[in-house]
Image (cartoon, rainbow, N blue to C red; front, side):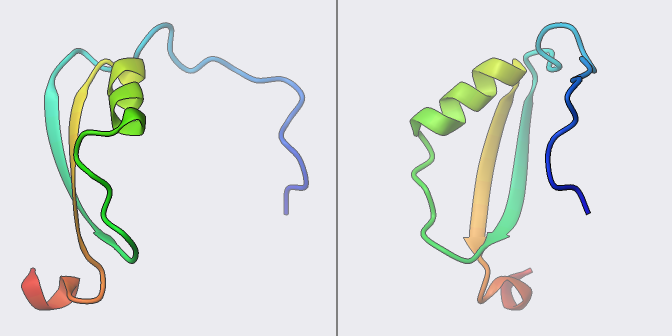
Length: 66
């Protein structure tokens, strides 16, 4: 069990890890589905240099529709 983050952080990449490509992810979500255009998704895509489109599905019915 970890009780705190390590004191020294290591860089795993230099710059944004993406190459500007586009990807789509479908995941179950047990909660309110966020709007497709929101500040968090925009900031994430900019920081990663990727166009990631999230398509959350209703977690309660996910197994029934997949």
